[in-house]
Image (cartoon, rainbow, N blue to C red; front, side):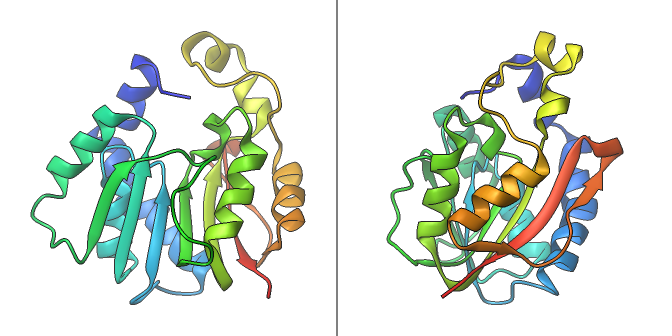
Length: 202
């Protein structure tokens, strides 16, 4: 589901970018047990490309493949990343519920708060699991159902209203697809986000 103008403003600004580069990068580095040095990483829902920068510059990914449902955001990401070599990153239009990548093609997948935007989010989880190699790592931050059901979120955003999840339900769905948590969820920003990591068995 595409963002409305309120969500675009909230997600695409200097404060949000700084937060991703510093706090969110540190969360993911800790959850990953270190950097993603040299790994091929898939970012689902890349927006204007800040997450790609974080993965390359803060988590030391070797290469980042990224996509977003919104062609406008993809063009913005390409402009942001144009000085990066083609070998380091690529950005395209895509859907987390139908990822056009081969089975087991990635060492890690990163979700900077995208899955809760998908009406059929379970399909997105299944697709992420499919694209991870055995032993590969999913790093995620997500918004729980209770937050999406607050008056402010219901008034200002266009998130799907049905079939949402709390952290434990998200973990259960991950496990159904062979993605098992590496520790307890972390809750940040007053519980607005839950953050975690899961590794693919096999």
